[in-house]
Amino acid sequence: MSNAAPIPETIADQSLGRSDLEALVRRGRPVALVAVDLEEADLSRLDLSGWSFERCILKQASLKGARLERTRWTGCRGGFADFTAADLTEAVIRSGDFNNAVLRGATLTGAKVSGCKLTGADLSEARTLGATFEETLLIAAKLPGFSFRKATLRQLDLAQADLKKADFRDAVFEDCSLRDANLGGARFQGADLRGCDLGGLRLADAALFRGATISRAQAGQMLAELGLNVR
Image (cartoon, rainbow, N blue to C red):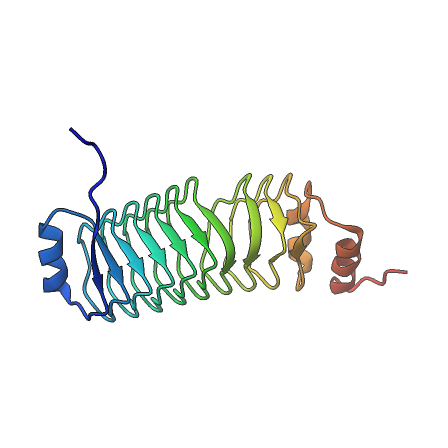
């Protein structure tokens, strides 16, 4: 008997609502949605595990409490989509626009996010063990208490983000930005910040970087921004 995964059914270029999705779920097999319009659709609490979404529109869609394990998202637009408490374990999210999306309390364990726009997104209380973020805009995003410990961060823009009590210990920054971020209580011991824009540093933040590595140029910039004359 073959143990091969079932070939997903493909649905393209349609507009679907909750009743349509419920009918697809009842078939008991994964579905590949291509260029499907799900704007403002109610997908809350549905089990869409293993589904794939390519170039789909999910603006203001509700995915609250949805089961989205091992889902694949490519080139989707989901501004203001609500993923509160959704399970995105081992999801792969690429080249998507999820500005101002809500992922509060979502499970992102083992998820991979790359090339995405998450400006203004709320990831408060999200579970992110083993999650990776690369080449992604997280400007003004809410990430309090987020753990990036021992991660290699590549092209992450965290400017103006809420990073209170975030854990960056032993992290390596490559072409990243923390400009004007809220870093109250964040931990940076052992972090390599030489590839990070630290502009906008306040005097109260300087002690946070004790034990971290910065470049000579960054040190001069930080002292200048703290109002000290470097000669």
